[in-house]
Length: 318
Picture 1 (cartoon, rainbow, N blue to C red):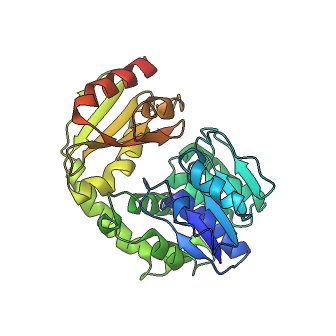
Picture 2: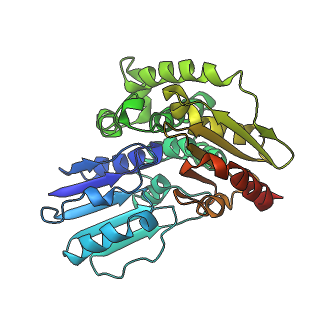
């Protein structure tokens, strides 16, 4: 049995989409909400023949990856998050780049020589690599309306990945991936008025109305921080709202803290767009933190550690 293991956000979905458009293969899909990064543990090492792992931090999956490799299973690992110590094995093929202007789908695009570049551009927009996506889109000769559509599609697919559980999402990421796999081009998604794009667009617009009246918890020259309630709309909008804030004020760091049911906070951090580094360094100082240089997060920040988090964020970007 083959396993395709991928992050449930735009980058993970678009990376796998490119691979399977290029090389169709029957595989068991393993994914989850965007924050569910520890996915390799779901691979049955007694049944697996091969594993593709996309856009999930190797650092968070080291134990499971080591066990898979020890069982003689071929693994292709493509990612842009922190790796930790990479296991040494002839069964492991690694394509990793942690540069802040790179995402997993762009790495797959390079591997496939731009064969499905419109999907890769969509993922880059979804990962808030807007300048990179615009540059690639212009090289492809895409018009402004085409660029705007790919940006909205990528944003909406990314938006769908945020939640405490699959119940918060409009679509299970595996279902969303399979729906998109039916289209050769993202522009075919736009043409189909019954496509998932329009469902996500309606959901996003409704959720976004809730953030228009929010006032910041902290707002200074260094950072801007918001607190969101323990509501499904807040969990869904948190990451994309963070990207929106970052684009609005590119010199500031931003954080969106969403209340969890256990009274801890789920944290989304965005480094300043003009200094896309350090977000992971702030977040990994907390027990459930991780991510990448430009964007990172903490799954469960205790309420009594909020001040510590704020101090570290200000200290990092002062």
